[in-house]
Length: 78
Image (cartoon, rainbow, N blue to C red; front, side, top):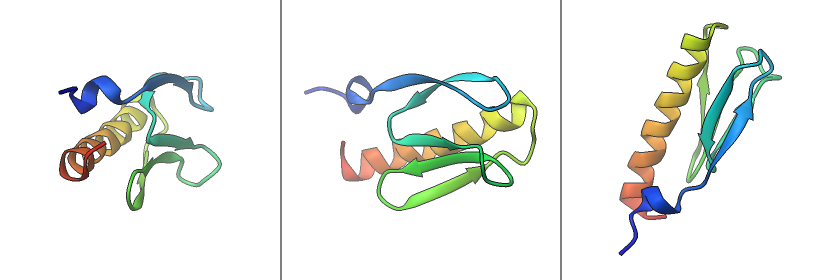
């Protein structure tokens, strides 16, 4: 049996501020909103705002989205 971690595809994504992240397929970047953030599109769409324009804030919001994505995949399956 294959783990979901082996089936989720990651891609490089560059934010408008020029930060580069490896982002799972179910998460997208929304740079034209205020504040900018990440949107989890797996099940219910959920928005995770950066609230900080530095890399730390952007990364923290992404980690929150990834944590929720993992929880949803474990509950619902990939």
